[in-house]
Image (tube, rainbow, N blue to C red):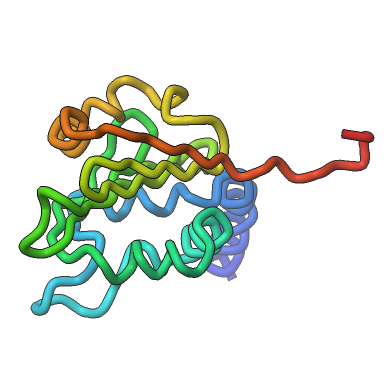
Length: 166
C-alpha cells in the first residue's frame, strides 16, 4: 500500500511539470545520435511525440519528410542553454545540403533551418533567427555554413487566433 501511495503521489507531483513543458523529455537525447545507427534499436528524435506534432505543424508534410529523409550524416544531440541542437547533412554532399534544429526545452519553441547551395530557409514556431541566443547560433553548424549563405528566408508560424478580437 505504501508503494502504491508513493507512486500515486509521484505521478501527481510530476504531472504539472510535464504539462507545462512538453519538450523537456528531449534532454534525454543529449549525447546520443538523433537517428539510430545500425547497431542501435530504431529511434528517431524527429518522430518522438510531441516534437513530431510541432515539426509537422511548423514545416508541413513536405519539409518534415525532407528533415526525416534527406540528411544522413549527423553529430550527437547537444544542449546549449535551454536549447536542444540537432544538425545533420546530406551524405557525400555536406558542403551543399544540411539541416539544423534548435528546440527550447523550457518554452517549447522550435527553429529549423535548411541550407541548400548558398540559400538558407528558416522555419520558426515563434520569433526569428535573431531571437535565438548567440550561443545557439555560435555552434559548429552555423560557423560552417554562415560564410556561404547568400540569401535567407524566414517563416514564422502564425500565432493562433484568440477570442480577444485579434
